[in-house]
Amino acid sequence: MIPARAAWRPALLQRGRAPAPALRPWLEERGSLTARIRARCDRFRVQCLRQCLAPIGSEEAACLGLPAGTRVWMREVLLLADEVPVVFAHTVMPLAPRHPFDQRFFALGQRSLGSLLFSDPRIARGRLEFRALDRRHRLYRSAEAALGPQPGWLWARRSRFGRGAKGLLVNEVFLPAVLSL
Ligand SMILES: C=C(O[C@@H]1C=C(C(=O)O)C=C[C@H]1O)C(=O)O
Image (cartoon, rainbow, N blue to C red):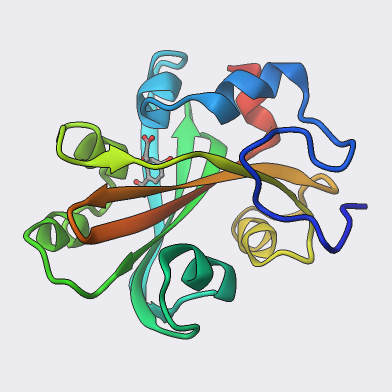
């Protein structure tokens, strides 16, 4: 059981619980996850599950400094390696300030957000924060809704990507199959 007070932290050790050693390089990768997966499989694919306006979750609101419940653009995807889901990702992007980047975000569809974020040197990644999730957490439940039953807990990370005043928050939940890559 993950303690109820578990939170996003910049360290991988969380109240005595640590990820499997083989998962650490995945969690700590600061470059593109898309590129890392692509290099380890024959066919990489993004499956877009949802892209819509939605009220931001309280944790995400606190992280981006927005009032709870603010409507944001939300995108949820699976990253698949040879048709096996290895990462569930949930990204939120505030509507304001408006930015030319918005159009490219909306138009992504089944293309990877990573290709957009990492091709623009003006977009900087903030620090990585980690958290072990169980089914009390919204992200865990979203992953389970998309994929069916998951192990008791899943490791996740989040980071903010920014270009000027425009910031978006990317959460990535690592699925057990990533360890087979
Ligand atoms: C941020 C990246 O993009 C990946 C692709 C995403 C998408 O298409 O929505 C979301 C999160 C990522 O895991 C990356 O490749 O590192």
